[in-house]
Length: 407
Image (cartoon, rainbow, N blue to C red; front, top):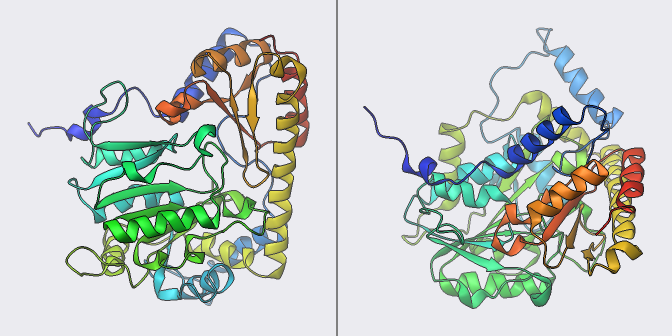
């Protein structure tokens, strides 16, 4: 018999979000009259912009005509879309040859491990989006979970005490560093000064940064960087992964991109961009042509306005959640809520409480689903992540229920 990939046997429990969904289903089955509201998984809820949806609809309808039919596209992505992304988001920072279109940021993050193999050292922010860790374990770059995390992964605590920015001295040379800003789950957004420290460290120590910028569109503070390439030196040490999911509501449409600079090299001097091109042309077959038509529409004048309006809607939801978490019942229990107004998540600390216990309490008393912080890493224990993705009426009702929570 063929042996199993030991990476899968090293994974512990279930992936965080399916576990949240399982607990919700079980609770709903036992409480059929409960009207459950989700502030858990970061899934967008508002309808697509009519302008963007029409572009995809028109493209899809045209496929039924000889003139409009298209078969396989370029695996690296529609050339017009690659150029438009470079023009809109990376002026004077990247060109189309460095942009690769995909079916989403999460998929790219998982595929990216193929560039570095099983021997690479890995460091992650703690707490962190689970795919950074789980993908590393499956790829063999990490071992078993010893109760405090997976062997072979350096966990970099990002807490209120260090302003959610890690101690870089804990990272070994020649390490793959996963870094997310605005961060999922904490919502913290790195400053230019902080990212300069990260970039300088990576260049000086032979590291490569996988920079997850999937929430860049939520940044409203003009002093905060929306891309790591605003930092001098980033093109020799960083890959940026990004997505249309949150700004355009493409969570189900599936469209993202990665930026792999031509200047980025492996230890032997070979091109990372060239190898990523091979991954995209060999292990991937291109994003949907229909989705890419929507991506192009999202980047014209009307599309950009529509995306800004949708993000503003979710940011207002976040402010409503933060306000209720600053109410008397939470303050008296020592709860502290963190929300910068530059990301979609509210990160709240419940001192002395286990994350899953608080998750269960909120679900039972308020019929509101959240996400336990411990699912994002050891430093997430005692925290809960509240997502601002939701219909306004649901958010307001959830806030009303939360205000009555007994702590």
